[in-house]
Length: 448
Image 1 (cartoon, rainbow, N blue to C red):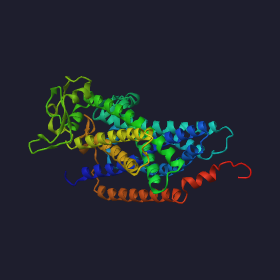
Image 2 (image 1 turned 135 degrees about the vertical axis):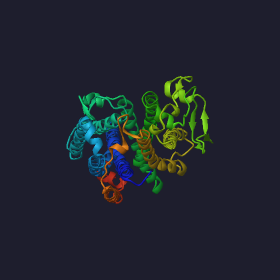
Image 3 (image 1 turned 180 degrees about the vertical axis):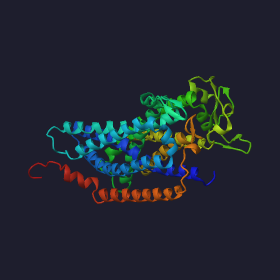
Image 4 (image 1 turned 120 degrees about the horizontal axis):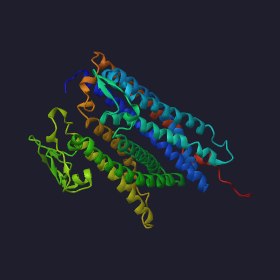
């Protein structure tokens, strides 16, 4: 790639979305964890779970504040960096973009109400009910923005006249063929990632000091959710593979290094390409790509040879697919291992080895999210709007694009440092066991 405005535009978008997706994932996943913890706390009258909801909600507010800034930056860079795309497709994606903003404010409003009504209701269930709109708002926000991405992959709901989109049907555009599979995948993996993140925090706390009931219960709950959502994410991945086989076969073929159209196609794991584009050192699962794509071991899978060379995605996306899937199965396997050891009374589930693996699972889950996004975007190349507009046609020609990159980079460095420092101050000098006694002191009998 040449160092031109197109490359700089892509780098800015990579930087912006790569940073924002961290906070967007947290924004979708944490509300569900809060509402589950509070539900269990009220149901079991367990102060540990109630404190989990309180502490996670406080930390969540910080990430929401950062997410507001990064989300605004995305809207800004869309107009500044991809003006030709916005001029052509802006009237089609305007509705889901507006609905995403509405969903965010819906979530933020109820989050504020939820935070400021702790201990205000005699009936604790009334406060718990206020958490539900926050969960719904986060999921809706992910759904609407994913609809935009789905439209870019499978555009529909418009007619073109003189290079302009006419007779726009925004509902049809939003309900494009990619929407269902993408929303399912995005939401399930967001829940999985946040569960892994909170499990990693609990495991790290246990490693630093002796295991308290608070951290042990938080770890057990989150590992159960890791198991649940890793299974759902695997199902979502299967649904996504079948969508690609039907609607974006070139992306599936590139991700699987499937060069020739054939029946009974093998699934290729790992390996590398030699100078002749031949796969070397791979692991082959016979006929499994056909099954993955069509639930039929003898189904025909279209190969890269069926597409023009200038419309093929980069072949290195194969690695992003492999490592994303590998991390997903690692999370599932780790959660299964945790519960096997937990139910074997002779073994300590809080041993250093298992806790260290759980600590590593948090960052790995976010790496999988980043890899999945890279696969989704790079797998659409060279198109920004598949079949209608290429990335090079959509990018700005402004000579100031390099300066813009460094301005965005500086902004994200400041935001990242600010987020870490604030969260550290919020929790470092206020450990859970101390707050537990302050907020929920145990009732003692007279004379004790």
